Image (tube, rainbow, N blue to C red):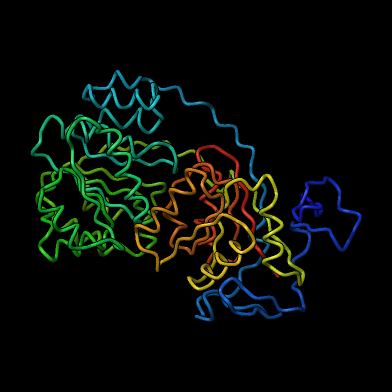
Length: 427
């Protein structure tokens, strides 16, 4: 457990020993789970009490999780460096694609890229199992861009669980296809349906979207799924977790029988096998899964003991090591309220939740990625969506409803082999 003392500037300074001043000391750790007798206002605007509140504003979905579930040290796992068998120039990618890859400074592929690109170029169906942040987007984009550049009648449909992931895939598509003349349409909620319909009428080679909006456009006869001979299901386990299984089944039913199908997932739970059987034909499996992301995360609790949550958060955010922070709250109202309060205190902060338009959500993420802000507030809409490798801390200002939600939240840090920190406020 690490302890901190208040500095003259109002923040905390790291100190190996507990501060000698009990009134000024602030610590977080697992030594105590006692609830304060004083009620404190939660992120969602409700007051907690000594008996604990039900997560989700009293929906009765689950009782408060035992805070000890939020305490775990990161494991020192030795992972042998992967030695690729190829360079990117060894693959039969188009020369322009290779040029774009080299321009981004890549010479050697990651494990999932090294083992997936050739089978995809050969036209094989493929199941790719890999941790988040291991380069799987490029693993399917590079050979598919090459396929389109060789045959302009080919079309690709990429289905993702979240708007943010869809937008990130389109960004990578634009970089890797520079100079090839490939067009794409982003089909996601929170954006203009009529604009997406107009873009689809121009017959783009790539369509990237979320299950609900893709199905909506198909039902409106704006998107003919039978035209797509190449289909990617990305982050399938997340899509099933989010309740998209029926949407995916309906989409698969409208796809052409003769197609190349690519299936990517961080895990392969039993629920994915139903989808795999309907989706794949004589597939190749590439598994480079190493360890759960949460194993790279130092997990601890912040014991409030009656202190004001906002004051405690304020002092934590002033610490130098909190370089890029994702803070989770329970409700949209609570996120907006905390955003105003932190801005009033001089913090550069953005927020994402269900009431934000896609343009607003994209701008908020861009600001975090480009270090224009170091703090992003969010509801669980982001816990399965964003892909930013350098988030140093995840703070659960409001606790999650379920332990599964907790794992998804803290998975936003400790990515791509880096260590992260997850802190959960408890009373």
